[in-house]
Amino acid sequence: MIVGTWNLENLYRPGGAFGPKDKAAYEAKLGSLAATVTALRPSVLAVQEVGDPAALTDLAGMLEGTWHVTLSEHADDRGIRVGFLTSLPVFVQADEAAFPEELRPVQADDAGRTTGRAGRGILAVTVTTRAFFFDAAVCHLKSKLLTYPGGRFQPHDEGERARAGAYALYRRTAEATVVRAVADRLLKGDGREHHVAVLGDLNDEVGAATTQILLGPPGSEIGTPGFDRPDKGDAARLWNVAPLIPPEQRFSRIHAGRRELIDHVLVSRGLMDQVRGAGTGAPGTSTAALPSVADGDPAARRDAAGSDHAPVWMRIQP
Image (cartoon, rainbow, N blue to C red; front, side, top):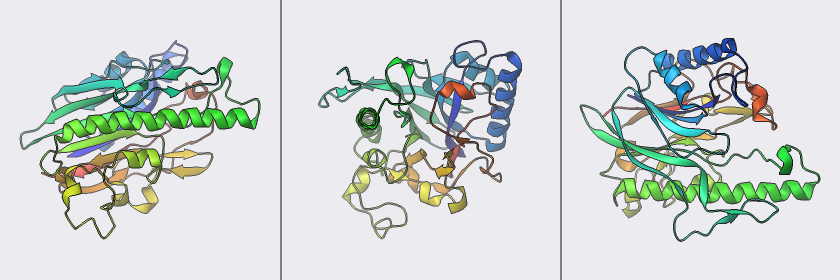
């Protein structure tokens, strides 16, 4: 069984402010996305940047077999949200955006406005199979792309750039605590028994502080001496499967020519024992064809086919 995550990049029907300008560009995008999903053959695919729910339904309609679309009700200012595209039945466990009660709102801009909610919802579902079931949560944390008052993508000076970077980091950090809170509830006190996966675009790499927040107690990452030494922390931990991805594939986006792994698959101890491999792109294909993207208006790629991210996936065998 393949379980993965993929940022579909501005999935809108044509004609709006962010989607393809015409039907031909839209059909080219859907065709490219559908070809990748068909090659990947996931049972569960967590998706991000669904701008138009109907567009994900259109994509599902291009795939062979029966597919289920499940979407968060919490979208950002551009209407993008997270969801699941699955060939297995699921039911919703949670769809949340509010920060944990103990966490105060964080500053969002120079005007002093604050926010106490994630920009996009964290959606959790239970996936059922004939052999077993597991819980999966999908998220899309605040981007490192910086924006400025008036819709600008360039700062007036380096002080403004630094402040905007801080506001984005505040938000991404707070959003990570929301995801971790959802994961804690799914773990139900013991991830050795409860099978949980957290999937999504974390907008930062494996070693980033925001990514590390999601893992729980440190010390047992894959490849470290503690991995094969069970301890009481295993009940609360999540493991990032990134070290299982072949080194030459260990990226999901190319930013300004630099390869980054910013999309992640995290699993509880019980599910980790069933992981048989991980990768990016479709199995047997290369992610080298990904475009190199730069900071700027995300609408600039509105007519691009496919996505600027590669899927990240794991193979599990109960």
